[in-house]
Length: 96
Image (cartoon, rainbow, N blue to C red):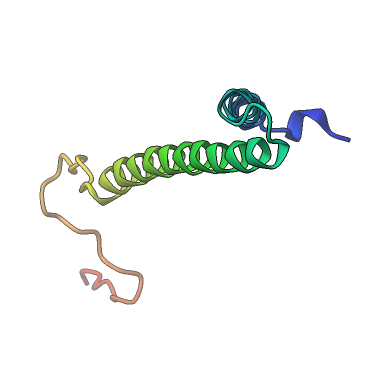
């Protein structure tokens, strides 16, 4: 397994979310295992959706900033002005 391919930030956030949701669920549904499991799943789903909505928002901001950079016109201008070199299809007339 390639350990460098693991997204460690997402893994740690989701692991902490699972632990936190299980902890909260166990406090709320003290004696009922089914209620504890259900509440833990609901709390985890809410954290999961919130985390990925946050990531999507961050990625949208990055995309918008990249689009702004790509759409800006180039600032370089030629020092010779508007002179354009002749194309290779034009024939040059030589003096006789």
